[in-house]
Image 1 (cartoon, one colour):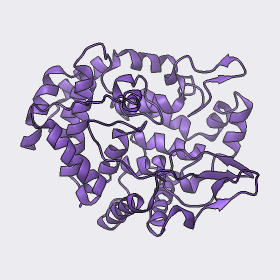
Image 2 (tube, one colour):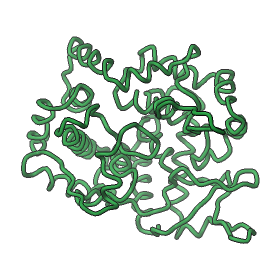
Image 3 (cartoon, one colour):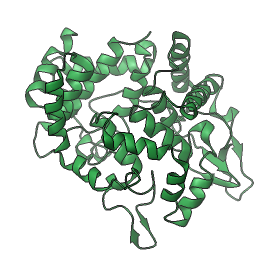
Length: 374
């Protein structure tokens, strides 16, 4: 174990809840016995958010309604809580470390691979019918329903065992190869002939976004030194050529859609005095999960800042005072979602809970760097 995080680990073992303690033993410290694993899982199964997800499991195994979908439709409330959305439910199961062989995960993944079930699940409001029919449009840039469905399976531990998903691995890698060869985003942009021109790429254009990155982070079949070096170089290139005011839409059958967090802006290194994006730590974690180590400049800079922040007592704290940072403070994360950081502690009324979440993130982040491929 890296001696620089010993104090952090001692703090987490003493103060953190069952999700963090189990992930810490399972993924970082090792030596988790079957009895201890079962005991921690029972604590996790009793957590209120997990109990909510159980309420949303349908007879066909699907969880909730839709995926990254409407909360309301023409006055009808479609999601009683965000966890009634398929993507949010999948994220909670993944973040809580619910075993891939458990009944709830196994049946959910089976539903995500059953065309008849999916067609029925995405027919409850008219826009979802169209969305399902067009589910592969935009796959090469990760901007479609199919990409979401594939990514959620990867998060649940099933990203390497299915032909369609292995094909998405190749697509995800190709997007990063594509951006590596650009001199600027303008190389691939087109502009609409509308009164107010829209900057767009066609639906079959390759380009990376947070879902193709996340898919690679949670899978292993693509991993070799050549691919990891390519990803590291592509991520560095993004920070070299992208501008903070870039704009991009995806053109699908004559309509323009906002992309699902395409990587068109510089990626920010972690600072404890600034939180100015809605998905701050999670993006850095998933880059580190690729095995790129400190070959990626933003990871190297973030790691230096994390080590400095932990040096005093092993606890990561954010010192954020400006209004924008407060708006995106991790203190206000409630539910897992598409564009928020990960929260593992269930009760933020405990004043140390957010310290546990941030400190576990720091320990995990440094662990990925210390065990990188490069």
